[in-house]
Image 1: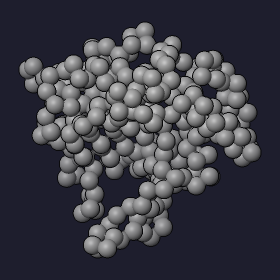
Image 2: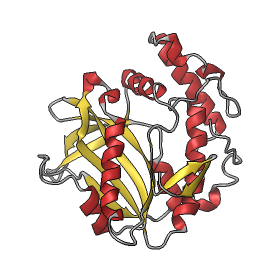
Image 3: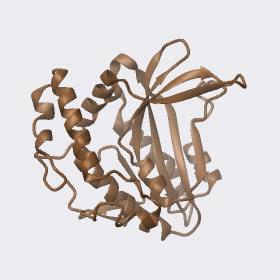
Image 4: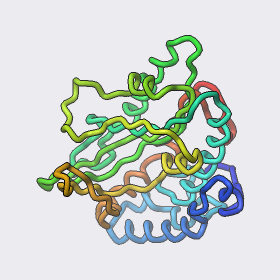
Length: 272
C-alpha cells in the first residue's frame, strides 16, 4: 500500500475543485459492505481474507489488492494530486482521452477478467510510441483501465473495457492519429470509440480517470431517434462479479502511465 498520506478532504482538495472526494469513512463503509456481500455469496475465503482488517492507516493483506477500497482511495488521491502538479508543468494544452476498443468487449458470462490488461497496456504503449517517434515529442499521460456493463436493446450484455487518460504534450489530431481504432473494426454508426476533450479541471478529471467504480449502461432509443444509454449502478450480483475481479488484481494494476513513473511513491517524469 502506498505510504503517501495527505490529509483527508476537504483540506487539500477544495482549492483544486475536488470538494466531494471520498473520505476514509466512505472507504470503510464500502469495504465492509463489499466483504459482507462477497462472503454471503460464497466467495473463496482466500479472496477476501484480510480485507475486513484493512483500515485507512493499515493494510490487512500481505500485498494490497485493487479491490481494497482503502488502498484504492489512497492510491487515487496520491496520483490525482501528483498528476495535477506534473501534467500542468508540461508545455501545451491538457487533453482528456477516453478510448473504447472493440477487442476490449467480452461476453457477460466470461466476466471482466476475460479482458487482457497486458494487451490493453500494450496497445496504449504502441499508440504513444507513434508520437515519440517524432523529434521533440514526449507526451505524458496518467490514467487507468476500467470496465462497464453494456446492455443492448436486444438484451445482450457485455463487459466493455475503456481507458481514460489525462494527456500533456500532444495535440488533439495527434492523439486521434495515434490512438484511433481505425476502419478495420466494424462499429455501429453511433459509436464513438475515441473521444478527446479539453481539460477544464485537471484534478477533477484526473480523479475521474482513476476511479474504481463501474456502472451498467442500458441502451434505449432517445426522442430524436438516436441510440443512447442510460447510466445506472450495477445490480448486486454484477457488483460482486466486478469486485471479485478487482480483488484478484494487485493495487495499481489498472493504472496506465506514459512518459512518467512512480518512484518511491512519487510520480516523476521518465519512461514508464
